[in-house]
Length: 241
Image (tube, rainbow, N blue to C red; front, side):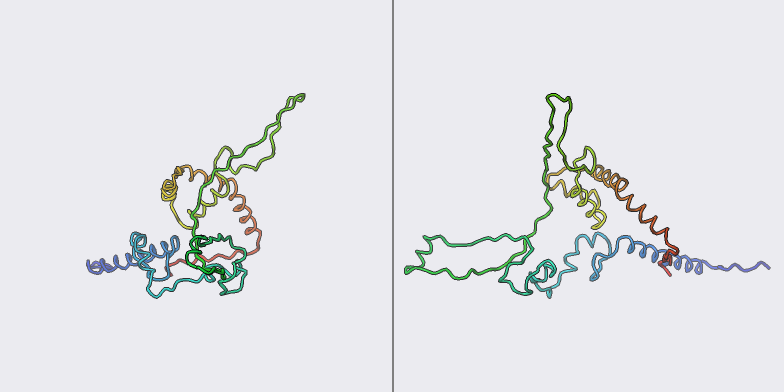
């Protein structure tokens, strides 16, 4: 008599397949969380499209109170007494806008003259998105009358030779892509809305060149420092265990 198979019925086979599918789905979910993370600890939405369009509706609540200026600006930057709105916040760039009445209007309102009291002061938080500015370097060039030589004045070293990229622009692109997880094609569209035409291919080339020329030195130094230790600790526990 032939030995009975370990899985003899289609029902048992389907059960085993479903168990393997559940394990695989959990592994994919754990890998996605490690790579992309959660955008919010509250009201986590299913699917990237829902997160993109409904994040504001999910995060906003009627009980959310309007933040105070002292809560928005950190104490180590504020440097002023906490909670006192009548004093300027030291160390923070501020623009004062004065709202006054003309002498004609004041004379019209006060027949017997007037005295100006202490101004009523309130603060608003302004937001300035990233702005582009072209820096045009004019390097003086000198030529000797007797000595047949040309001398150029000292000027800042270039981040990339013959490139318009400077550290602030490169850092902004790196921060958007690798910190805020903004794809280069979205960043390209954002620049186009500001009438700046930087293709994703150009930005990708900058990132590759800068990482190889500058960041690779830091990476190699870190690897060398780690390998110099007697013991290296690593957590290689599978996420699904």
